[in-house]
Length: 119
Image 1 (cartoon, rainbow, N blue to C red):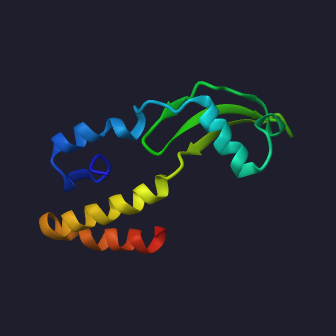
Image 2: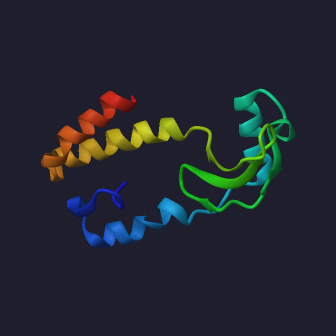
Image 3: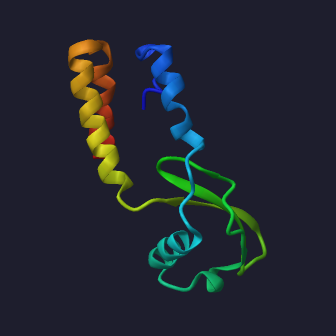
């Protein structure tokens, strides 16, 4: 979060946390496959004619894969959000809001709005 807030946090925090945006280790393919099949209610091979097991990128909340839709042959990218990310996000927003109430009160109103919209 500190990497995305701009001037709200010192540059060293932003630099330290920026790898969490897109340089995280990816999850094994069987985990990704399980998430997709659970969401769609059918095997991956029934949805995609091809699915690249190696992700294009991975971040703290999920990863992205290239694939081809079986129904029409369109090439797509598939974003897969990791299980439990929403709960972590809610906790992170609460933690950041408490920190901002003490150290950066100017950022509290936008965080309250984020809570309203996403929680």
